[in-house]
Length: 188
Image (cartoon, rainbow, N blue to C red; front, side):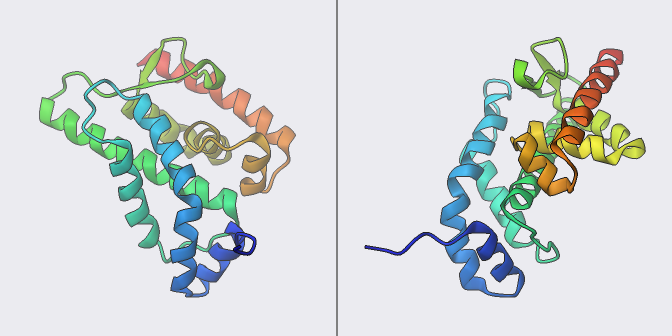
C-alpha cells in the first residue's frame, strides 16, 4: 500500500526550489485537471477544430515546464497559469487560422449560461481575448477574475485565493466584468 499522495502545493514549491523529481511526481496528479480544462475549451470550439484535447494539454505542459520564472504559490495559482496558457494557445491558433483564411469565419467558443458573457450562444475567441486585454488596461483585477473563473474554471474561493482578495470582491468583480464584456462584445 502506498502512502498518502503528496500535496500539489508542496510539489510546486519543491519544483520552485529546483527539484526536478517534484515535477515528475506533480504531473500525474494534475494531468486529469489539465485534461478537464482542455476538454472544456475544445468542446467550445467549432466542429473540426484542428487542436485535440490531448494536443492542447501537451502544448500547455511543454510551456509549463519551460516556465522556470514562475514562482508557484499554490494549486490554484498553478491551474490559473495553466488556464491562461491554454487560452493563449487557442487564441494564437485562432489568429493563425484567421490569417490563413484572410478574414473569413473566426473560431467560435461557446459561453454557457453559468459564465454568461454574451447573449449569443457563442462569441469569437479573438474578440473575447481583445476585450479582456482592453478590460485589463483599465482594471486588471476584473480581467484576471474572468480569466480565472471562465477560462480557468476556478471557484470563487480559489479565485479569491489566487488574487489575494475576498470572495465578495471576486463576486462583485465577476458581475461587473461580465456586464462590461457583454457590452463590449455586442459592439463588435
